[in-house]
Length: 201
Length: 201
Image (cartoon, rainbow over all chains, first blue to last red; front, side, top):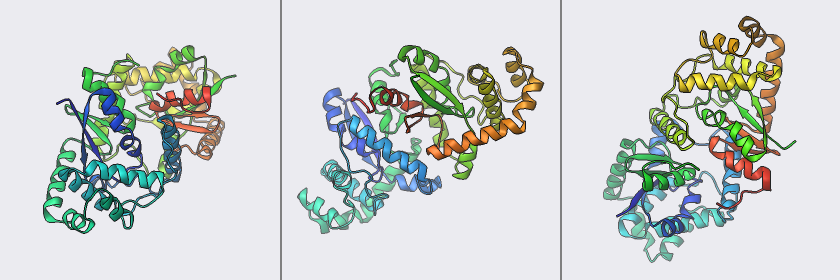
């Protein structure tokens, strides 16, 4: 099947611009995207890198850039959203469990809607349990399973794979081993998938 | 006159993709770009940020991304070029003097050609003096003037202005106070210049 690996974290602000658009892009291009949440925060910690921390000018720009580009894509988020979101590592654990069980995309999409469109913290209660219940999942069961040994072992393996592929940021699209980092390289990833090169534009 | 401020450093790798294309873009769009070299390294030092240092995965990606996008733009640099280039702060001083005296754009363009197309260190001799002589400038005079009190005072003032505008990286395009950071936001800057918004694409 025609596929691009879409590696992401539930904590990325720019990832809002992917989460909100990817279904439409799949329909438009006929390309399937394989949603792969991973523990980006662990790789960032290894790099001793904390995005935007102690960089007020860069953080201010990020919000403005995100706002302008959201409007370009026909989106209208509340800017700024709460940042950094609380409990992002746990949000990733839940998203990863959801991908294993089939409700992960809906969880990520709903969480981004609430985070960016409503300004609500998505990975703590009450929002977390509300989102899960809305997806027909028992919050107590999900929270226990997301914290369970099996889920974390598999998530660690996925994160090890991401590291071995060379990922250093997210979202990153991977096409036959080629990395495309950032929401603003999605078009490049699609071009590469189609042609194995970037066509002039 | 219809203008976009193009703030840059002579040390940025991605800036190669702007320097090589900006003349053609000016012709195509009818927009003039005001070339403004500044001491980005001072602002990075204040941010305690050294791009790509101790981040091998990110550095490897930067070269691959730059290479792919260069090909997309019809360019064919030698990748990787020497990095970081030696004596970038002095390269900026020379470029800034050149802008004041009218040969700055040619100096920057020639330096990037030699750095990326030939793999030569551009801001140390022999290349530096060769480039200056090729532009009809006396290298000894230029080197003295670039190091002079007046040039550095004016460059510091320019860098202070960049900081006050909110610049935290380069190249950055500034359109009526709106910042667009990165070679990959040049299209956004042009759209903003034309329409005061980003048009859907």
